[in-house]
Image (tube, rainbow, N blue to C red):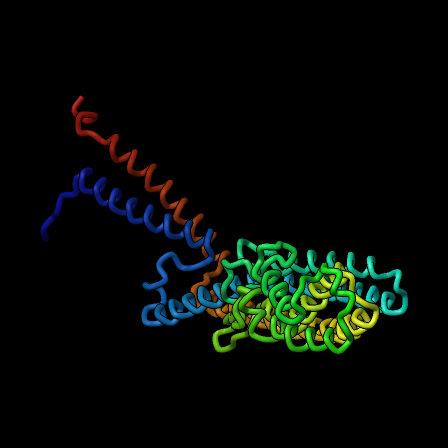
Length: 349
């Protein structure tokens, strides 16, 4: 039988390698106890790691949609608030015109109210959120409407030109007192309406696009998440506010004012109804976005649960393994220290 000699150096080296291995295992175990998942998912799951990678990608995509939906929801909320304000000023103008129709002394009041409505409406339509105009459609970087009260605006220029073309004099000319009911009706129907209800709106008033912002709210569902300044109710309200504020500045005859009031009352009533309808449609979309976000969040939770089930570890087992490795390392350190103290010189004295 052959006897092999074991040196203290060999024993020390063996313990050193074992200590290094336990240190590496301790680092992994500490990571697992802190994260609650395998330190090396690829090694632990093998071929199934690709499935988890795919689910993580889906989570990123779904979270991106949830974030985009939050932006769309904020835009819709701001739009709803703006439409509520437009509806309120429309109702106020309707009440003022109703009173003016039965009382000649209300002319100045109606004109002032129309000017207020026009100014307020212009401010609302040109409002923005996070640097994007709410009512510009897809032209989010362009101010939607011009200010009619600015004498240099194309809307005011076109209106003055139409009045001059029809009557041959300006609105504040004393001859305006001779305008008949038939002439006023013809002017409002054939000269003014095309500037608001027709193509003149986009030529002189609006820089907004007819196309609304379309957002993807789920992986396979889209929705129009904005309104534009080209909505029918907005056009009609602008027409009433502009014509009343402008024409009542002149010396119109009573019969011409009656035609103006009748036409305006009809249009502002339609405008309030159209604005309410557009607001309701925006509310439906707002609910769709909210429900879509809830569904997306549920899918994210499901994917996370599946990933946790496959990658997760028992926290108690991980904590026990950490404690065991620490105890083994402490013993290894102590034994290594004892071995390093061994020397043949201690026995030669």
